[in-house]
Image (cartoon, rainbow, N blue to C red; front, side):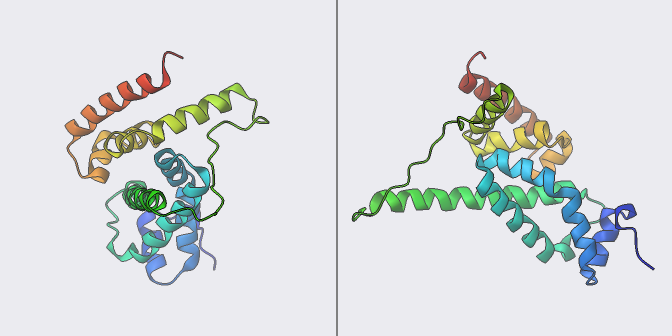
Length: 189
């Protein structure tokens, strides 16, 4: 008899995955890969890096599945892991930038990042989405994370507070500040 993985709860999938059923974890990944990708992309601003971090998130989640509390929302638990992976990525990127400036180039070709929207991507709404995503990714982590969790991922204020380990009032304050900064960065468009 074959199980209908889509009918099982997140807690049941976690238990089956811990018991060695690979298809159970595959269903968890199927359910949450898009929300985790949106969260990570909004935090790092680079789709290619986001894909790598999503993969790292699910690898870490699989390894930590025995610590998952079935009473907690799987999306919030995975969001916590994803936020931590984004923070790690940002720290590593800062170190790499520092080291790259400190070391001589020695004739090596420099890679120049093109922040412009590709010419063939002419849809105005796509350009605006890219512009907003880049602006969000430049916000400080303490403002970016609550903004992404609440407005993009749709977590409740309580879930956002739990993921970030802060009070609900702090979430509210940071959201206000993040939106103000974002409006400032984007201008009056």
